[in-house]
Image (cartoon, rainbow over all chains, first blue to last red; front, side, top):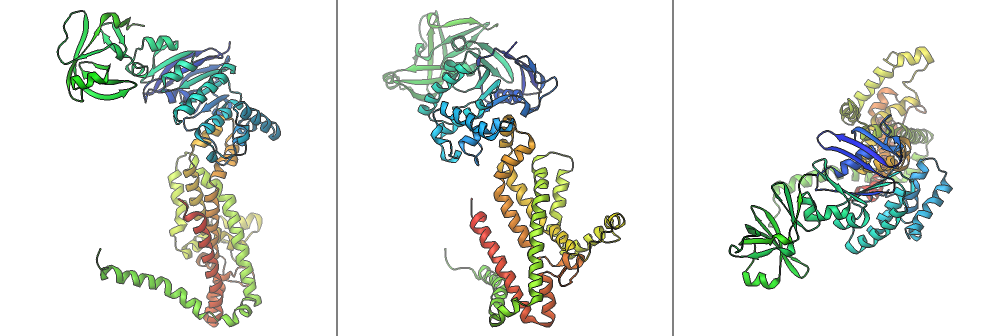
Length: 323
Length: 259
């Protein structure tokens, strides 16, 4: 039996059951404070947690293993490279700590830097690296320890978009070759859709949804994921209604015709979104609506204005709120 | 902004004068013509040598004993930690002569610990060079420990945790991560401890006495000379002044002005 089986409880913060097969990449998403980072820290042993963790059939909790004996690779949001060590020494740190002699550890580290295409930066200190380069070193450092569990906490969050995009592609390649379990905490729908085999949605410390990225993106069960993928998701009785902002009609007067969903509210936000303008209308429901710049001018749509929003039933995807 | 108010200006000038005048007079009154001859007098050389020896031994003792204590205070959560930290800071505010009396009480031949040292090993500490080093370490180590503890805290525990996830045990983490990151604090603390040791007088003369060759350091020598040969006292003071200003300049350039 390989892969990860875990049940972790951190009182008041986390209560999660989790399984993942070897080679699987699980994206963990959820709003701030949902317990995503706590989950990673608990798996790594950095935060005391009750419950069991077994990786590759070996228990990490019976008897409890300390942080340094769990074979995890952690990649932190801010990289957290050792500032006084060169890129090479950063990557060689894990193998050396685990008893590999200096020459062998250096050779191993160099091969990892080569795989990330940054072997020429081996002697640089983290302060002399760009954000993207530093994050490559951080990922190489995590992988050089040959972890059975790779934990990444928003690895692209501090990078600008183009750097994040190229690093994301590179990471996808490395993850395909990685045979352990990878958990990737992210705020970005693209990460989840492009890198993950499965998505785990956390809210207030518990798993509220789990499934393939497409499934979760198409039928979100939480406001957070809906916003992340740019969908409106409203609860109606035992059903969720999901629809994109593009199918929403905005009018100043109550729309005619009965088979339409309609809500009354005030415009809370106006933002340019691609070639259209995205409005957030807040009333009995919160609805995102994309309208043309012409419509904004003609209807004089501005913050605070009372409007009606409506959607045709045929444009709505309806699914049960029960799992 | 208008004129400077006299109520602020006058006290400020007085304070500045109080600080500057004594040092300037010392420089002016030093018998520079006789400087080399006085400094190379055997008894002076002896005191100088002993001061160097004691201060270097003190810095070594501070580094070897103080670094682990600073680490303990910065990284390990235990009952009584704040109490221990307060105890470390006590010698900073303790009058040195009281420190000397405390040392005699603990380590004197009939002292709490000294009694056992004498009974078991035949060891008597007071009035030995070892006593000088002990007294110096007692008054200097707080500067060192607080400086290193501050540096360890500033470096943060995050990177220690990163090291742990990479398989490093606590000793490896200390050696390869915490200590290198706290190095500026170690160097600054060592310089402060060394400077404090150079000028140590009260605790030393109380606990170790003032015996030429074994316990008479520069400050004790200066004190002795001031009674009979004030000129020599001024020359010797000049040496310590130069060294102190040197330490200040060193600290300023390397650590105090850095953000």
